Length: 337
Image (cartoon, rainbow, N blue to C red; front, side):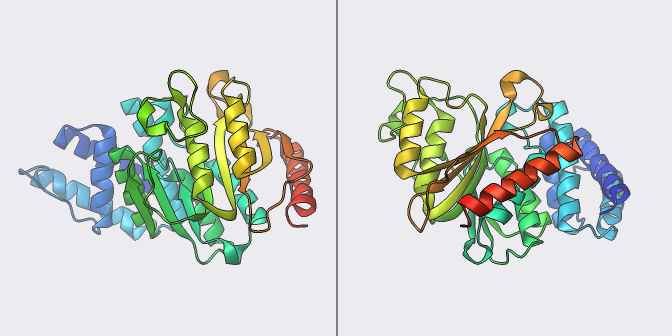
């Protein structure tokens, strides 16, 4: 993978977005979706109400031709889209719960999945709060390159704009995925999953009537959305299936966490909790951890000890290498044994 190739493709893609943003009078994010759809159509520019003009249409087609000639791989295309989405965050001030999961976290989750799960038995993967799909496709590309041949992706989100990006992104990368525009707390219309991965939105869930049957609902006031989604995801897993969640660092420090722990112990096994490097987050409040759960049944057993710790900075090569070896040893003794 050549960074120059990705950089040149991104610069051309960014120029198409800027042209469309000006011509159509839209947000950067909407222009990004429009440009991605044009690229999916082999660089054919959609014209509506004489916009974009013929002159701009010609410019756009020249940029698309350059991108297509670059013959980017799936992972290179994903990174081009990622750079564009980073710029969208800056331009459109996308709220924190809708921003992308950093690539480094996606690679780490993919590494853990590869070492913990069985390739032959891992098929259906769900992101229950899929957003732009960056975490899901990052994981897919890594697993597909390492022998996972039967993967089928599913994503749920209640934001149609983000789902449009996820759909466009997966199609550009040649990835087959099914996305559902719905509130993930309501009844899901998807099959049982072998695995759930998600960077969970943090905050209160406003529709109290929808959570009456949830064991993680608050006794008073609104319930935590991330608690509800963890419960929903566990119920959506096949026996023995795994869930990898990005959660707030202080997940189990609140009073409501007692109900969450009760559900986890009832429906699954609490296998691990790793604090992510602080360098990945802009503030102490936004810092997250990686939560590893497994659904009961299917030969699953409680790990002893639970995998707990601090993930060192990715910049500290020796410390991070030691950490990975410790995780590998834990997997061999507690999961694979």
